[in-house]
Amino acid sequence: MVETGMKGVGGSVCPSPVGNKSPNSGAEKSPEEPKVQFKQDLKSVLVTSVLNLEELDVDLYRGTHHWVPRTQRLFGGQIVGQALVAAAKSVNDNLYAHSLHCYFVRAGDPKVPVLYQVERTRNGRSFTVRSVKAIQHGQPILICQASFQMIQPSPLEHQFTMPVVPQPEDLSTVEELIRIHLSKPDLAEKLRQGLNKLLANEVPIEIKPVQPKLFSNFFKAVPKKLFWVRARGYIGEGNMKLHCCVAAYVSDYAFLDTALLPSPKYRAQFSASLDHAMWFHTTFRSDEWMLYECESPWAGGCRGLVQGRLWRRDGVLAVSCSQEGVLRVKLSKL
Ligand SMILES: CC(C)(COP(=O)(O)OP(=O)(O)OC[C@H]1O[C@@H](n2cnc3c(N)ncnc32)[C@H](O)[C@@H]1OP(=O)(O)O)[C@@H](O)C(=O)NCCC(=O)NCCSC(=O)CCC(=O)O
Image 1 (cartoon, rainbow, N blue to C red):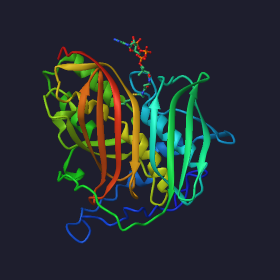
Image 2 (cartoon, helix red, strand yellow; image 1 turned 45 degrees about the horizontal axis):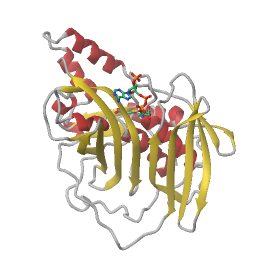
Image 3 (tube, rainbow, N blue to C red; image 1 turned 180 degrees about the vertical axis):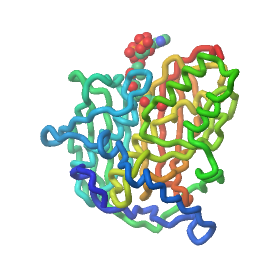
Image 4 (cartoon, protein in one colour; image 1 turned 135 degrees about the vertical axis):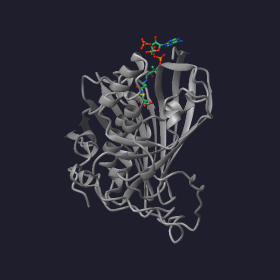
């Protein structure tokens, strides 16, 4: 088990009802991840800092920020991840998050920490529910309900099939793709500045787009994108509660802009997630590559709906997500 310093977010791996049976096991085996030395040495900042909440009182925690988006409002994934950490601290070790539902009701202020107040809504025989309020300046910025369940195997099991895509070893990271763009001598200066800003970002997530073209948002496309994603640094096996909190962080990144893909002539003037829901199906490692399959079935009324699936690379559906966001757009000059 990983030593996280996170009381209550420890525990063993969750053998969930959907189980650990890999659709790919016994058939084609995924190539083993090469042991990259720095990844083993460098513990994920998500574990050491972002999700390492300070306990102020019973069911009251304080969280600080690591990376703040250029919008200068707190990253939604950080707030959801921290809220889930706070909720998980108040449940028994034999209970695992299976879902959460959140509303982002105010922009988070990066200048001050966030307080997380947990209400023990109900303890049941199988299911336990917690409500968490994330507070800044005396007012809620996020309300979150998280539900936990004890391990209950069931004969009822099915899942969709994971899309067939190139393996992460055969794809470039976002940073590598940006450097390729930057090496082009005819690159517009404004775009160069924007790309350099992106490179300077210290997002604790690594991404390898399956369709790199779509990440530039210049091409009209169906509202669907796929990318491999993992937390930067080492987290390790064994702490499933922590991996769920990291997945909550990761799942909000580059999610909502899936709704912009069919309309490349517009760019978002104001975009923010309004709500976020997640369902955790089985065990996974958030510091290992997972395929994020994002699609947007609908956009309208200055809002976009996005749905996502996080696949383990052995073909197991690990997490499902949904989000609606506000999207106020203007004609793009590029
Ligand atoms: C969504 C809102 C903004 C609610 O919208 P409201 O319109 O009620 O709020 P508001 O404060 O009155 O307005 C917010 C901004 O929208 C503008 N605005 C409001 N109504 C408008 C209208 N009808 N037409 C044009 N603009 C309008 C306001 O002028 C203001 O712009 P100005 O600001 O220019 O004055 C709020 O609930 C909120 O901030 N929630 C938190 C959302 C959030 O932070 N989510 C997580 C981060 S998002 C994220 O992490 C995604 C990450 C990713 O995609 O990678």
